[in-house]
Length: 371
Ligand SMILES: Nc1ncnc2c1ncn2[C@@H]1O[C@H](COP(=O)(O)OP(=O)(O)OP(=O)(O)O)[C@@H](O)[C@H]1O
Image (cartoon, rainbow, N blue to C red; front, side, top):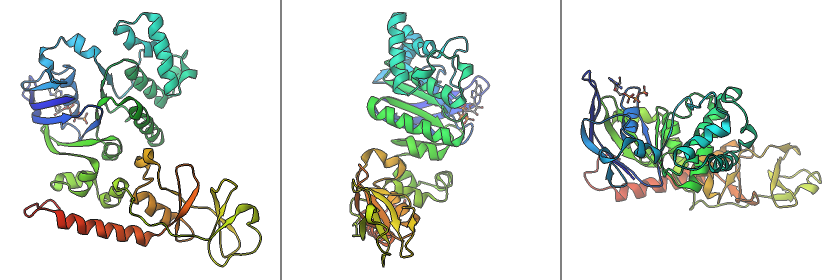
């Protein structure tokens, strides 16, 4: 757990980097700091490993004031990933990754074994013997993340680690981080200026404003549903209502029965209604339209894929997207193994949303002006 208690930082030239920042990054969670350029994100991050010394307040790591720790020892317990990966150009990938365990006291041999393990985990074992210059930007970033993970540090500071790569690779890196984090459960403090990245990765998101002040600290769902003021509302963006659907589980959504047919018999007659063709394992293969032609299924709504919440599966967003992207006007629902479960209708999703709004209104406390 990382606690900022009333932390202030005034630089030598008088610039205020942080003004009484108070927030707690919980153990085992990803806490994201997001905000416009110059709002103090990097400064906050660096107070944790004392690359920046604060001028008021205190920072605590698992209850210990970092000011009382030896900086070198403190940093050995904290992984640090920066934008340009920060790899040593004259060391092969495997030795780059082995650096941290060596610093932590493992023999070179043990450290290399550990590095090989981590490279395998992030799918980079084939690159172990390459030099950093022989990797793409995205691969270098992955090595940077692997290097941070190779240490046993339970705490990871990540400063815009994915901002130098193209949007497609960036989403891949985000997925990879979420997958690794599901296994590792580290305490991660992550800095970005990209609100979409913040919402995708953060268990909790701190929106900061220039002057090093905290505007709002909340789980992504709450940030989208109830921004505290115009600054936060503007920052989280215009389509926040739609994006929030990605955080609402579709547990109460009713599935409808759709006409189905074995794919093997697909060509035996033109159906009256849109019909789902199923393969031998009960998995949807295509729509058969009333025109007698096969059509693409559109995106599928996965009913019980709990790991995929960030992709909207199992959420109202996943359900609505399936309904809207289907040529049949109704979406196809499958289980985690891809087997046919039923159909989803956009109207049902919208009705659920209406019901949700009514419940929220009835539980909103008098005087609570945020909703
Ligand atoms: N060493 C320094 N001396 C003086 N001012 C500094 C120093 N380091 C940072 N600052 C100032 O402190 C403020 C916060 O900087 P910081 O780098 O934390 O912002 P940031 O939110 O990470 O910005 P960005 O998204 O642009 O990286 C800025 O106004 C910056 O100019």
